Amino acid sequence: MKVLDDKGKVFGLINIIDLIVLVFVVALVLGGAYRFYGPRQNGDIFQQEGEEVLIKGRVFDVSQYTANVIRAGDIVIDTAGQVPFGEIISVETVPHRRPVDTAEGKVVLSEVPERFDVILSLKGVARVSEHAIRIATHDVRVGSRIVLGGRDYSVATTILQVEVLD
Image (cartoon, rainbow, N blue to C red):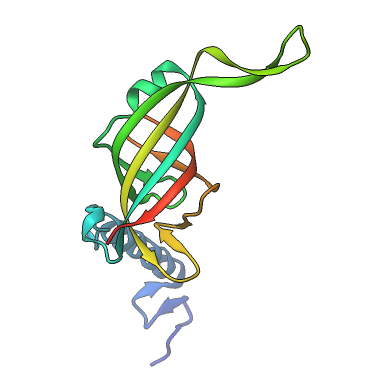
């Protein structure tokens, strides 16, 4: 028995083109089923392995609306990897300030109307080594910028302080 007969059918049953289409459709169905019903990433950030860390960050120059939607208790995600980053413990909103030249030639910090800085305290679980503290897809270091997101916002956060809790 030939694999391909003179009519182009595999084992005399199905056309080779039909077989390729059938395999493609089955692969799509299986891929979709895996995507929706396959293993899920654990959304509880405090059940992940690692050490608990406290992070202080600052979001610079945002509108009042953005400042109002960032709330304590929010679980924020690392928008680069779409994985949980941590929980916001506290939020402090302060007026945004920029350097301005005065008539006397001095440079002073002046408040910018309707613009704010948001200071966040976050708690998360990190893999800690002697070289780095890693949460989600980022090495968390003082001065680094990480884009964090909640349900209603996405903000570039500058890390001010990282503390590994005992």
